[in-house]
Image (tube, rainbow, N blue to C red; front, top):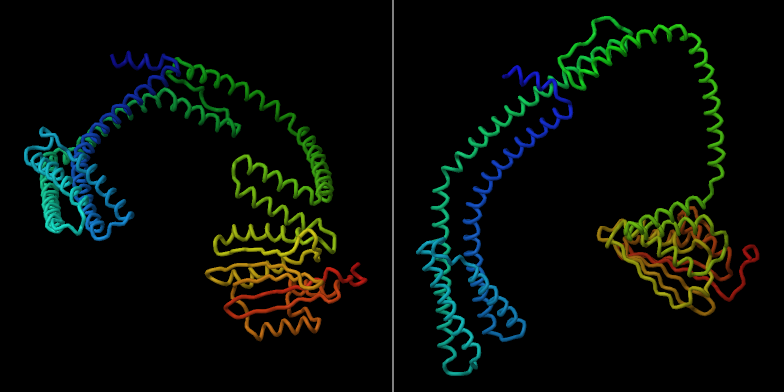
Length: 500
């Protein structure tokens, strides 16, 4: 019988072999899962009943205590807020009471009696409690009735504690009854797992004999052929399926390959010469392609950067990534403004828009640590200012002021008219600077020395003084409180001739 099964196994097709193996594995896995689920359900159901009973009793006890506390608060001060708390506490207590198990066959005589006492006692207590709340606190019988309600609450709390004790006692007894079964479960699982492993190993050996062993033999002979070693006998396997046919075809290809190798050796020298020429040709083409690539790179202009950022922003919008879309749009606006603005004078609206985009990116970086506010008492579209004026000042405020302060801070831009000039104030609540450092910067600006001021602030100061008659930049700061940069830009006066 065993020999017949073995011959039958080597005769059937590979598809049927794999199907039979898959079916057996699925059957073994199904049995294993069903067995483990059965054991798990038994364990979980047992513990779940105990835990649920304990949880419901504790929930009722806690709800009753909260109701007593809410009742006392409401009696002392009958405000709308405390009445709402009291009503919610009563509703929760009633719901928890009704959720307590109340089936005699399931919970037993003692727990049933305790639960019955709680239900009836709470019903009487609820009626008396509601009648008390309808009374006027000034009536003669209010205080005695109030103390009677307190006594009833105490009785109910005692009943609830006793119910919790009885439930815990019942749960412990139920657990002790099943603990022996729980101790045996690991051994049952171990035995069942060993049996399943033996079955799977047997099936694996059968499949390996029909598939893996012939494949290993062919792989060994293929490695010998790769080394131009055609010695050795042809492969023989007991398979009479597709694998047997594959082995026969392999033997035929082995002999055919041996003949092809001999022919290839004769043409090897000619092929090497042709190969060298081809390599030289490919190398020349690579150099030509590299030159073309460098030419294309030199033709790339900022439009590629803006178009690419816009494309990424569109993709973010399609993917509903609004924050990413806005960050990319803000970065694109900054690049476009920096790379494509060639005017000396621009509307204030454009400068404020650049600052807004820059602050959005910084707020994404620092989060709630950085705040921003702009108060413009002028029409930004009708005010002209030097290009690249506001953003460097705001950047200095973040780098040298807010970023060094652990709790962060805020930047406030205020713009107003004073006579024929526009005053732009950029204030931050950062770390500030010492009075000595502030005087050094002011003296450097008054003496037309920008080497000690910094690239951003010095450049702005120099441009304002050069472009405008009567323009200027002032610096105010206090260590630990922040810094204010105030720029005065005339609007009615003529520009210096060199800047017109």
